[in-house]
Figure 1 (cartoon, rainbow, N blue to C red):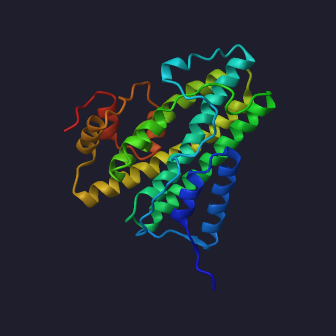
Figure 2: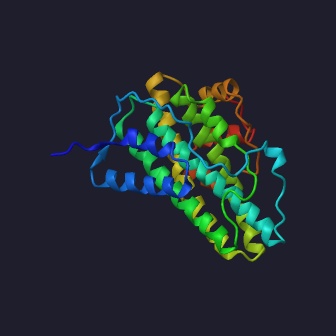
Length: 272
């Protein structure tokens, strides 16, 4: 009987794939194999890669965030630029989930399958946005983009605690706050399909941030650390961006943030 394929090694193979369509297909294949039990994680495997991480296409050209510019919602191209920016975020989010799987050994099997679920849903989001772009005669890679999400992934490559604290709980949680006003702008501009895609993304991203919160809490317990002061220490150590309101408090509650954390976030309480 053939041994099951190892999930973390396959996640690494998928991570270095440069073609977005091939990456999406590979994520779906890994998820299906995991579901049927033919692809299981080996938490003790120590993996390395000689390929560039992450694998991504030559386009879009990556520039500093301030060079990306604003998108006018009163033009088709302006709305396409916004959809493109969201597609770029979701493509990076596929990569960050795959990186969380392969890079960090020694965690429970559920950690790896949780992040595989995230990768699958991010692949779905990217596909929805790319398809919507194509309906408007645009495509992913056509506009410039920035790389701030992946920069924090790279900075936290040395510590899974920092990764859980500063990527899902910080950068992805900012997406919970940004989603409703973006959705409102697209709906007001008449792009109901894009607004519906953002509804799907918000629903799923709550779950992704909850996974980050859950594993951050697990790791804090494992290391005997307090959640709130440890987060503040990590944010300073890694120079994480300071979240700024308005905050989607209900979505953050659903994603597992405590009331004490939300009070600190809003400046109503200082971190101990």
